[in-house]
Length: 286
Picture (tube, rainbow, N blue to C red):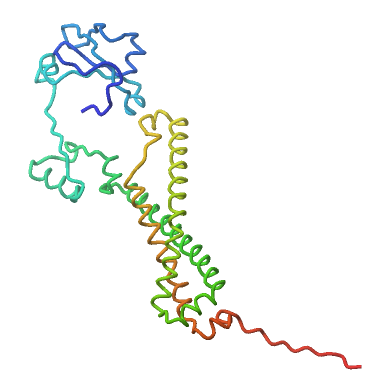
């Protein structure tokens, strides 16, 4: 399987056509319609197109020639290649268990089973210790950012609640219950999300685009296939959900604080005032 896309021309339609990688085009100085002789194939092949270079080819400084299935079977003797089966698993299953079951049923050794390590790592299904440690670090960083966000939002809501003590006292005087006051404070926090979440998502997307562009510019041999201007809708959805949950979590303490004030003390404006520390002072009497 060759995962790169055709950048110029088309895939082979006959057994005498071939697609070369872009690196072969620049190295061999050939173009679409030219003929090329490949070792092991007696007949010359006509170039029908060029495919994008893969990261593996760029790392190994090699190029590839792609034939159609009929062309491969026509020009390559059966004894010169082995049959390989490609298995696509459901993303909702335990992939490592399924792979182990398949290998056990077909009596395959570990060397005979090749896994797409990059894809499994992205899906969180890899058994590689390095990937597991990497995800552990990501979880720790996520929790630290979440805690910092909750503390900052809680502090802002607390300040807002203390400045509006009289307002909450009037609500209590006209019959508002503690539950209604808490609900009001939570809704006020959620109203912040209308502006904060879109701004945060836009800033995050721009930063990720900048980092992807920097990686592709600094190390093209490793990040040549890394897309720059691409949006992950799953990540955006997760960001929105986490943003709402963070605000709801941060609004718990301020909401309880606003609901715990009695109507009389709230109207008097002394709900959150601190008692002054009594000090003794001696005055000289003359």
